[in-house]
Amino acid sequence: MFLPLRFFFCIFIFQLSQNVLAAPQIDKSIQKTTFSMVISGINQVFKDLGNDKVFNPQTCPTYINKITDWLFYLPADQLVPHNSQEIAFLKSNGDSVIQKIFQLRLKLHERLKDFDKANKLTDACVLKIREGLQYARFTNEYIIEWMVHNKVIAFEDSPILSGTFPFVLKDPSLEKINLIAGDVLLIRGKSFVSAMIARIGDEEGNFSHLAIVGQDDKGQLQVVESLIQEGVVVTPLEQWRKAQDARVALFRLPDKNLAEKAARLVYQWGLNHAEYDFEMDDSRYDRAFCSEVVRYAYDKASDGKLIVPKYRSHVSKFKNGPYPKSLGVTQSTLFAPYDIEVDPRFQYLAEGTFYPLLRQVRIQDSILQSIYEWMIKKDYTFYEPWWLGTEATLGKGLRFLGFMKDQMPTYMPKDTIKTILLFEGVSDSLEKNLFQKEKAFYEKRGYPPSFQDMMLANEEKRKEDCALYEKGKKSEFHSFFRGKGCNL
Image (cartoon, rainbow, N blue to C red; front, side, top):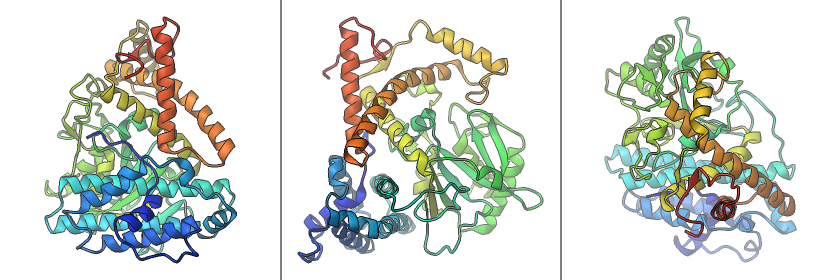
């Protein structure tokens, strides 16, 4: 099933608690304040998640699905306060709303572990928990953006996972976030390639990269990761924490001894500087993509007893078309970075956001969602333009001569370079259009468009560009990316 990424968990929580879950009646004096009702709904759902009669392995898919199916179609104007009373409420209680939604995410992950421990966790439930975590995350970010825009809070740049609430959210059991050996870091990068990876699997996710905290012979912490530009690299932790990524989530294995062993082994392996694995095949370790580094660490440390992840992503939504094989992905399943989010053997402890990048990755996600949907539902495909082979060859040559190494390595396959260039050609056009539409929307209404609003803007651009192509006029991307017609 092709699953669109959707926004805004909290509003429908109230709707669901009223219409489906038979939540207690709310005082009429409170009903005038939308967001106070939201809090009431969140509390009800939080209770239901802990009630085995309401939320269990059998009801899990339908329970979450009733929320997520509704949410996708809610317009943006139903997700923000409009009158002075509502605005005052959110300004005063936004922190509480954000914290409660994060607690819902922690509770979902806890129930995932409970169901797995009882050997009752179904694939359908895992899939829907993935969705629930995604929607709740974007709701947190949407409210944070509203609060920053309305000057309720101010963002201050700080090292990864060391900032203040609400830009860093943590499990209440943690007094402070101290990274330790073996910790797994789930990351969302800021490039379009990151967006391609985050949405490549049937299950989809909010993240595009994985790293692990290794440990050297002196006990110093080092981050080990595999980067497209360089392959496997080792970076001192505090230096690594100076990076700016849209999201970073922290996962930890409770077995501290095993985690430390994995940290030491992966550090030594990282010093060998293996090349990046563009096939994303984690069955061999002579090359490695980002997720494979984490798999290697715990596979070797446990003598093969702990293979990560427990629940893998599938790659079938493109119906055996040329993509994503052209990107190098040839397996029917893969260890997508965000698979760690539903691995019940790891604790979900904290998450940080770099506010200045949230708008950018939200736009990227909507664009890649549209492109993938056109490929799947409208049979869009890439037609190699005459200039592509020359550009790809030139690009590869420039890399061998020492140019552009910060973008792609010299050993990147030519077909992979072509695929990325084609995607960038479409994405650049859609991004330019969407930034303009999003800016105008924001300036007029004072809040960002919903994910559905952005996808509609992408669809309008598709039809406009397609019409130009069909009339024989110069189009922005239909000359090399098109389906059977504009009105499909």
